Amino acid sequence: MNIDRVTVRPRRFCREAIRIFALALIWGSAFLFSVAQTAGSERVALLLQLNGAVSPASADYVIRGIQLANDRKVALIVLQMDTPGGLDTSMRDIVRAILGSSVPVASYVAPSGARAASAGTYILYASHIAAMAPGTNLGAATPIALGGSGQDNGQNGDSKERQSRNAAEAKAVNDAAAYLRGLAELRNRNADWAEKSVRDAASFSSTAAERERVIDFVASTVDELMAKANGRTIRAGGADLRLDTTALDVQSIEPDWRTRLLSVITDPNVALILMIVGIYGLIFEFLTPGAVIPGTVGGICLLLGLYALAMLPVSYAGVGLIVLAVALLVAEAHSPTFGVLGLGGAVALVLGATILFDTDVPDLKVSRQVLVGIGVSALAFSLIVVRLAFGARRRAVVTGAEQMIGISGKVSSWTGTTGYIVAHGERWSAASAEPLTDGDDVTVIARDGLTLEVIRDPRKSRGPQESKEKRR
Image 1: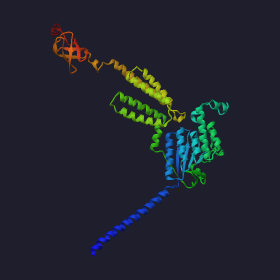
Image 2: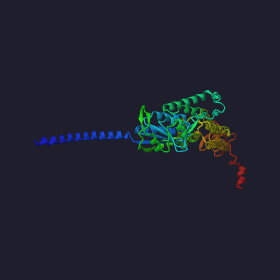
Image 3: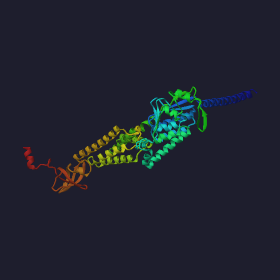
Image 4: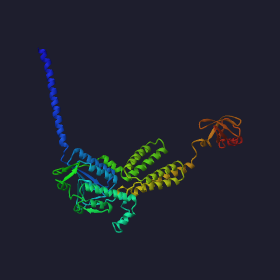
């Protein structure tokens, strides 16, 4: 009886422990679920800052910031802008991210003196809330590649100007105008001015933009923006939402290492320098196999440069000129033409770098200093090759069959006009027009296959009479 009690109690104890553990697991799961639910509806406004040209790096930063806000289900995204415009592809990526966001996006042109020109106007129109600080402006949304096509804002007649455009320019303008008008109609903003901003490059100050219903309001600070946005009804994620922006905690999202790295390598100047360094590194590695460092550094730089070029608008003519320049420089290195091919390669390289990037955005163009540096480096490479070529012509041949001509040897065995000599530590078959004896010093004057033609070395061979005079 006592034994049964001893065996039963531990079983009951184990069962009770399992039940307690299961209840604790359920309570813990419920607690974590409730925490996740509360964390999923944070009373937070994420602040993103878009400064400078709209580029692949800034687009990546904004898009990932919007994704983070949607994952955390924050109350509001504030996109503070100061941009002169940028790439059409990057702008459209940002617009798509805003339109697909379930969290409201408030684009805010600030601080005073900032602007949302060209691509920034599209982003502003696409946002759920559009605001500007006093002393800012927006507009000039004409595709930037067409901005210098001779538009005179109606001084010579709009109809004449439009007739002078070719089909490609007209297509680009019509596409941009329809795109911006569609965004304006989606957000119930002034669609007529949106089209005028594209066709006539019109711009508005913050006060005029508010008066013409281009933006929702003017706000001096982010806090004032949230105060004026409070209570507004917007449509996001396919549903109508009433904004509650009271007492929101503003958290600024800084660019991480990936964005900073992307912003560096997608700078046209840096991308071009990486490509040039990569090309020269591989050329030096091929010319001096086994150096390792030039090939390793060159390969890394070339891959980074190609990655950057894949994200930037590139002209195929520029790429072709750079490829031609590389071919000319390599040809100069392998078959020196005393600078002719090298000079042609330097010219082709500079011309290719000048027209490589197919954009007129000032922040996305190659600077003159970089072009000068590229030209100087190409010329320096050509001069080095020319100097090495002249030096090689003056030096004696040290490899191949020709290097045997003129070397000294010693007769090891000889019969008549043929025998064997030792030269360079090797035993060679030899022939001579004059009889030789063992131990004579000889000089190689020609080679026929594996047979050397030799003569007696005049510097070391002396006749008997000369030897007697020397002994006296």
